[in-house]
Amino acid sequence: MSLLAVRNLGKSFGAVVAARDVGFTLERGEMLALIGPNGAGKSTVFNMIGGQLRPDRGQVLLDGRDITSASPQRRFRQGVGRTFQVAQTFLSMTVAENVQMALISGRRETQELSGPVRVRHRDEALALLGLVGMQDAADRACSALAYGDVKRVELAIALAGQPKLLLMDEPTAGMAPRERAALMDLTASIAASRSIGVLFTEHDMDVVFGHADRVLVLLRGEIIAAGAPDAIRQDARVRQAYLGDEHALDPPAARSPA
Ligand SMILES: Nc1ncnc2c1ncn2[C@@H]1O[C@H](COP(=O)(O)OP(=O)(O)OP(=O)(O)O)[C@@H](O)[C@H]1O
Image (cartoon, rainbow, N blue to C red; front, side):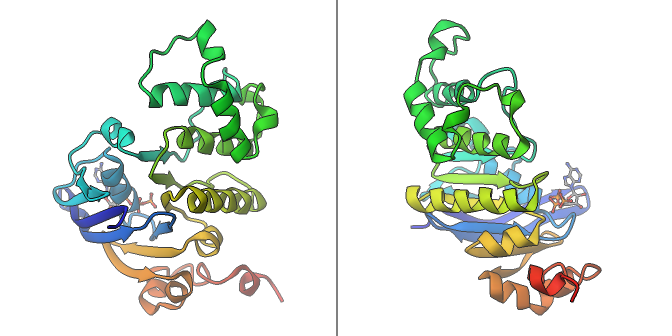
């Protein structure tokens, strides 16, 4: 059974059909990219899976269980984690405290902001920070970190909820190219080692083609292609969809001046 199965999802806003008959599956450990030109419906599909938006029709199944009408909180408890385009850490707290808070809220424990929170789950938080290469920064304030490091902490925060499915909305937005590749390498290795399925939206085609196992392409609310990165890159309909930016799908070497 697939980790995530999306069936016939549809959503309209007035006359605009933002998603039409969208269906796909995602397996454990798989990195699946959802791409498409601006306005193609990526956020709409993403939000219907995360629970922020209710579909007009269709189903979302996690491990075979229908979560179509579940709230984002309930989905979170059933194993749906999410990172956002803009990092969502508490800047005044330390790196470790941010992860500790995520561990506390993931377990629905009382959130006491003084005393106990400083020690509760600290070892587990340090282990998660070790996983994302941020253990040495545990006692620094999040406000003092470079943006790429904040994104790593955000990944640790998402992992604190022990997700089976991780939704990443433009995970590398605002990052330098080298940092992007490092964050996505890290994400892919954690996804593989913990059998987490990752669905991500992304505008940076180098990230998509360098890190996705499979790519889904949306155009005007419909999936026009799905497959391995190389096949998607060659797909005539996909290249047509990106017209106006005809080299958008080329590998980096082909784009550099001779
Ligand atoms: N809340 C809303 N109300 C009205 N129209 C909406 C709403 N949300 C999305 N749309 C419309 O639905 C279509 C799909 O939008 P969506 O944001 O899902 O696309 P996207 O692929 O995520 O775009 P982008 O890459 O620009 O973020 C667009 O035509 C958009 O204008």
